[in-house]
Image 1: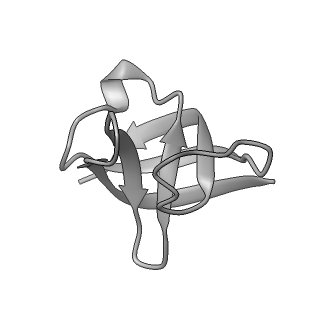
Image 2: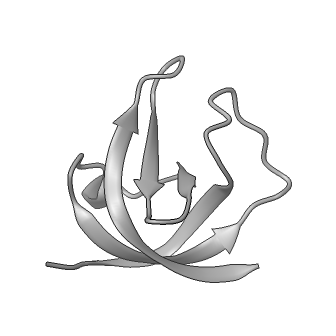
Amino acid sequence: MSIQVEGTIERKGFGMGTWALVSSKETYELHKAPADLQKAGLKVKVSGQIREDVLTIAMIGPVLEVDSFEVVN
């Protein structure tokens, strides 16, 4: 399922650590996040796919595979 989400990037310290997109409604675990997106506090709009076939150790929310993103102010 393809979605667009606006929120803030956070680094979560589960296991080896994971990157998350925290929106006003949900927290998404980022799957294969591009290096330019791996910056805590960055406010972004992300387009991507919810990956129901991917399981993670962190289990902080739905897994979101990033197709594209833009920084917002």
